[in-house]
Amino acid sequence: MKLKILAFGITKDIFGASEKIVEVNDDLNVKQLKNFLEGEFPELKKLKSYFIGVDEEYAEDEQILSSINKIAIIPPVSGG
Amino acid sequence: MIDIKITENQLDISKCLAIAQDLTSGGIATFIGTVRNITKNKPVIRLEYECYQPMAIKEMRKIAENAVSLFSVQNIVIHHRIGILFPGDAAVIIVVNDGHRDAVFDACRYVIDTIKQTVPIWKKEVFEDGEEWVSAHP
Image 1 (cartoon, helix red, strand yellow):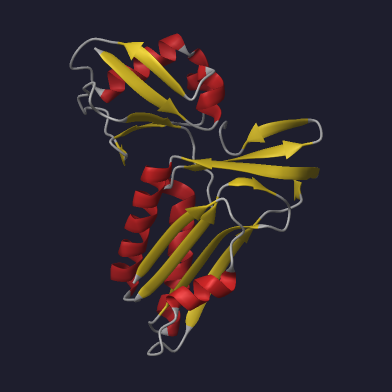
Image 2 (cartoon, one colour):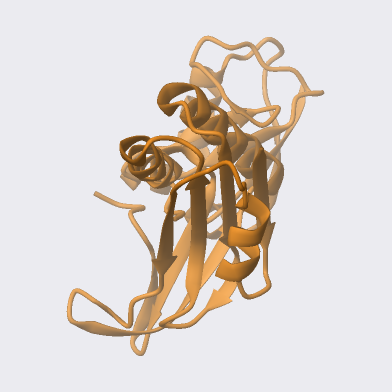
């Protein structure tokens, strides 16, 4: 399935774009997506941490993804 | 009453106080986060803030709602600025009122501390010799 991933902050620099479309297996979960993205973009592993947002909520590793989800990669936040 | 806003415009403490105004309240606590002109001895030219807006609004609303229930306060205003900010600019204004004195101080503290942990807003520091996303790397 195709997933569109929004990128912010330093991950926009890492992806080279504010969004990336990736082709992955159906029924991928968040952890598997992270592994996939780290394979494509090893720079992600150097970050202090990062989360995946699904439909504007922080997602757990076990959450299964579908192409209708709004997916975002959320590097360490620094608001306030 | 909870008022959450993200804007590229200059923040206005008087406006935030007016929004939070409650004549039944006896005390107001505010926090204003401002841009410093120096980081680790390097002069900062500007900060560039960006956010994942729909999720940032949701997370700030959750924080405000939690603060209301944890500290028994009534009114919380959180205004956060994004875009280009210069030293001295206010990046965030938090106003809490209607509660006992301890509660409004504690709620205000809780709100800013939690914003810094969970809200998808990011800032990049721009120096003369480069730029860096704050807190991205260990």
